[in-house]
Amino acid sequence: MRQIDIISVTTGTHYLLFGLDNDELAGFSIMLWITKYGERMVDWVQTMGLNFISFLGPDLWIHNDEDQNRCNLFNEKRDCIVGVVTNEEATKVKLYDSVGVHSDDIWEITEIVIPATSNYPHGMYSKIPQQRFKKRDGVWRAEFLRNMKTDSDTISVINALSGEPLRGYQCYMLLKNTSNNQVKLFKVDVNATKTRV
Picture 1: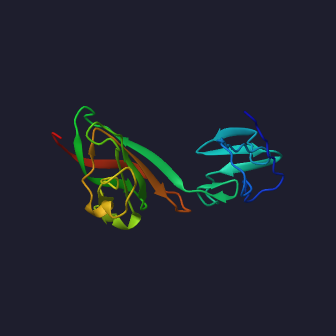
Picture 2 (picture 1 turned 90 degrees about the vertical axis):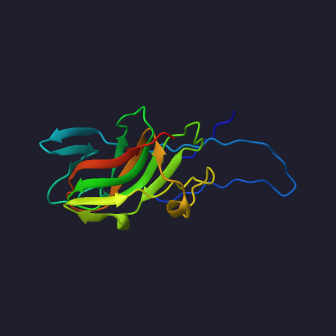
């Protein structure tokens, strides 16, 4: 095994190119990882009321300050992502019908993952775009789309509309919000029906 360390002294996009001449043959495997040192290493993090502060070298950063945009980490805009697990009655298979997001702003669900079982060896996967949510009675509601892995282990967008319904013992969802303002997420309701299959 041979290890090659490549160190960059600049920020930005970097490329790693390798190859062989036309008349050469070789067999190899590559393991690649990135380790970042320097200005993005946080020296200290401390709570301060509802905010928190961090020291990055000689600089003091105040996070979640009312005068700043939310989800701004060291002057880089980030999305707010929240993971939610639903496993009520974990021993029963459920057919997932709809979701209700109790929040003061609209969210999207970028991933819905149902683990593999003997009946569904590929597991199930779906998502709910922001446009599918409608606000009713102060709650953002949407129906679950279909299994995007209905035909194979490969995700297919057409299956989101024509695939099989989402069913399983539990499911994991990733909710995403891209607002610059403070957003409150109070509760997520998942409506499911018990099924025998």
